[in-house]
Length: 247
View 1 (cartoon, rainbow, N blue to C red):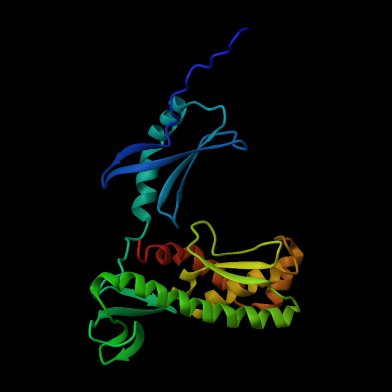
View 2: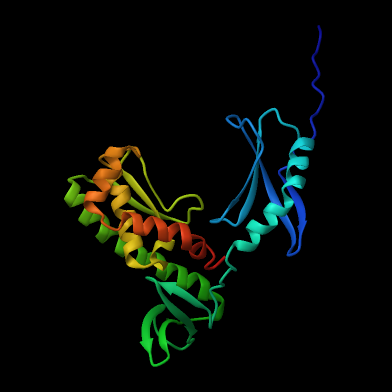
């Protein structure tokens, strides 16, 4: 009886590292069956460089491609906004308005939005170690409240019924609509001015009528959302800053 022994394969490298003026940068490596060429992208949402390569591409070729584009990568990384940590004293947007985070350990409750004599604030109760979690929980609750109201308005106008509304911290899109009728949104929309959240709600609800981005879809969306182009421009210009909040 003949036995076929397969030579063990070395593990596939999942990332490369390149040196920049700001220090070393890790670049994720992704094989894609649809890719015909090597491509390099910086996902503003995740602040993560990704090198996509064809399935049959080699690590040597991928590394050489990355080395040729290190200068471009460094410039793109430098353009990203700095991360804003969610800590006492930090200023973050809430419905488009800068709010300073103020920790008051003895205050009752969790997080409260107030307009003090020093300007808008998010007052956070409890231990300092819980500030980030409590602020994000608060933002998610407010995002859900605003999105449920906006989705309800547009669903009534378009005579459709979503099956569920989910909140996520997505890195590639602000919202999505599943064939099942489930709508998903980034909770970070609550950081933006209200017309941005309203536009995304209209966009995804419109997909319940048109599951595509055809001309018919855009005409229908424009009919119910007059801020479509204004919102799309704002997101292209300011969207990365929303993902920088909290790292």
